[in-house]
Length: 478
Image 1 (cartoon, rainbow, N blue to C red):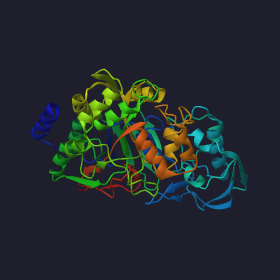
Image 2 (tube, one colour; image 1 turned 180 degrees about the vertical axis):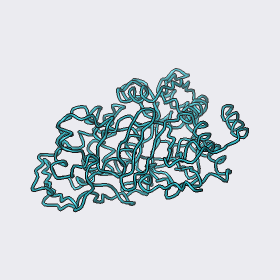
Image 3 (cartoon, rainbow, N blue to C red; image 1 turned 30 degrees about the vertical axis):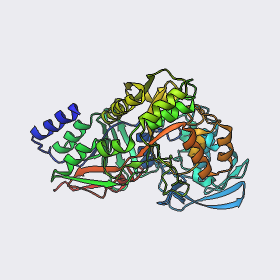
Image 4 (cartoon, one colour; image 1 turned 180 degrees about the horizontal axis):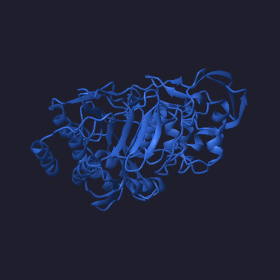
């Protein structure tokens, strides 16, 4: 807590004089995006930016049901879907029109890629045919009633795909915002009114707050300890908006590790964490304990999952039953983000009475995330962001979904779960996952955004997305 006390003292001593007004809307973010090619992006910042640069065929409504964006569709048969592009679509940012050929080229490229984490999602596609400029027919190898919900990848221009264009650093889509530059900061421009919106990485939460108070940033969202959120709420020049969250935070476990492959050890870890205490003390309002990736209000949610109660005595007993010599030494990897390190230190303290000695290794984001993807960890902490469909359970825990073709980073394999996933028995599948603990569920973190008073038409979303950057406005006369 010492760093937070000193930070708050520093905030109180600084006279926060806003800079000269600028037309640019400046968004200070905790983590810069890593990859602006939607075929490869998996980190939260990249996917949130990509939603603004590109448009997919399909997105989701407020109830997580698939909703048309670029197309409407017809179910021809169990294995055939016909998609028709809407009229008057926005062109790509290089001014070429978006046609059915671009859709085909985008998904053909995904099928051809061997290193895309999303490619496995489309392995069931048998063929993609185009009729005219506006009709795309997807033929499947096997029936899939959820197929339209999978078509959420942003569409790329065919000619640039064929040229081997570097979308990851120079994206070209047809979304609300187009790419301008990416040097010290990422700069985008809104197509409808030329509004410039920039994204500057500011890892330290106190510095992000200072930039907002000084007028050096117009908007910040998420990744702040609750004390700083409360501090911002006390400032008359700042507007803070909050909402319930749906993003799932968890501890990932390496199931190839002989210690963590023992169920009793995993149960002990689960009982060694006081989730509610963490939520009450160091998280923003509207955070809540989680049981599964999808929240209970989702159509595939499971409200019957009982949280693992904090019980260090039981945890220690489970470790003894597992034949573990105490203390159990484990290495926990996380990013250098101050709030994530804070979570780690609290977990470390909570686990000590349970006989668990947790070593914390905080790494820069790129190194940390690469270690996670490569399976170079015992424990790690991450958050699933923007997940809408229950197929995530197959991608995260299916025995055929080890990276790079899926997200089963802990290399968990369970034939019983595989069967449940294939049959889409979601309540039974989530119950099995909750019992077997291939990960340790933590919480759904509440969402908030803090902005200058002259910023309007922006609210945080339950999944943390930045979609309102398509509508955000800044009154420079205030």
